[in-house]
Amino acid sequence: MYTTGCKLFFCQHILSKYHKAISKNRFMSTNLHSSMNIFDRNAKLKQKERAGRMENVDTYDYLKDEIGYRLADRVFDVKRTFKCALDLGCSRGYVSKNIIRDSVEKLIMCDTSETYLYQASPPEDGVEVERLVVDEEKLPFESDYFDLVISNLSLHWVNDLPGAFSQIMRVLKNDGVFLASVFGGDSLYELRCSLQLAELERVGGISPHISPFTAVQDIGSLLNRAGFTMLTIDTDEIVVGYPSMFELMWDLKGMGESNAARNRSLHLSREKMLAAAAIYQELYGEKDKVPATFQVLYMVGWKPDPTQPKPAARGSGEVSLKDLYRLDEVVKDIKKMPLDDGDKKK
Image (cartoon, rainbow, N blue to C red; front, side, top):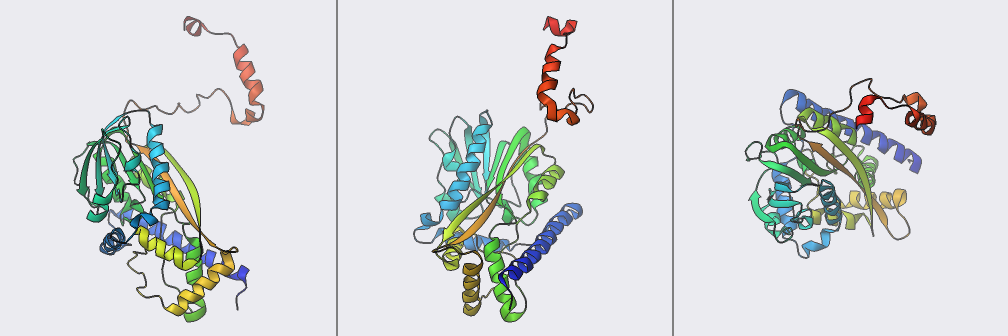
C-alpha cells in the first residue's frame, strides 16, 4: 500500500516524464515540418458541438469568461486602434464581448464549431463583425491581412503548434501583434494524478485521461522560431473549488474541454472513477470541496518591422551589473558628471 507521500512523488515523476515527451514531440514537429497527431480534431469538434447544445450552457462559462476578460485587458494595453482583428477560436465570445470600438474597427470571429460561432457574444456596438467557420490549423486568409490576432483557450488543441504560429505570423501585417492564452502543462494536475493512481492500484498501468498541454518553457522558443519579436509570456493559476471530482469532470464536459488525445482511453469504469474520487479527496480535498488548478499561459508577440525599437548595442551600457547593489550611488555620480557640448545643445 502506498503512503500519501509516495503516491504524490510517484505521480509527479510520471507527469514530469509525460510533459517532457509531449514537448519533445512538438519540437520534432518544428524540425521536421510535419504535424504530430496528438489530438483527434474531429472528436474535439463533436465535443464542442455537444457542449454548445447542452441545457444551461451559460452555466459552464465561468472559467473561460474570466480568462477571456484578462486577455481582452491585454488588448487594451496596446495603445492603438486596430483596423482589422481576428479572434481565432472565438468559442462563445469570451474575448469578443469585451472588445470596444476604440480598440478594434473590424473583428472577424472564427471557430471550428458552427454552434459556438453563432452563440458567440458580439463586441461593443460600432465594431464591424464577420463570423467564419475556420480550422485553426488551416487559415484561409491572405498574407499581411490583420493588425491583431487574438486566440483564447483554443491553440492547446492544435496538433502542429509551430505550424499554427507560422500561419498566424503570415496573416499578420508588419508590426501586427499576436495575443493568446492556452492551458499550461500543470493544469488539472490533481485530477491527472488521482486518475493515474487509481489505475495503478487496480490494473497496474495508466492511460492518458487528461489531454497533454504545452509547458511554459517551450512557448517562448516556439514563438521565436516562428519569427515573433518582443515576446512577453506570463503565467497565471486559477484554482476552482468543486464538491467532488465528478462535478469537475461534468463541468469540463460542459466547457468542451474533455480529453481529445488520440491515445485516450474511451472507457473509464465505475470502479476506477470511485477510486480516483476517493484518492482526489484524500490527497487534495478540504472540508467540503476539492480544488482544481488551471494553469493559464498568456503570450504576446509582434511581427517584425523596421520601426520597432531595437535592443541597445552590446557593451553600450553605462552601469555594470556588479554595481547594482549600489545603484543609487551610481545614479548620483552620473548626474554630477559634466555635460558635453552635444548634450548642452539639447
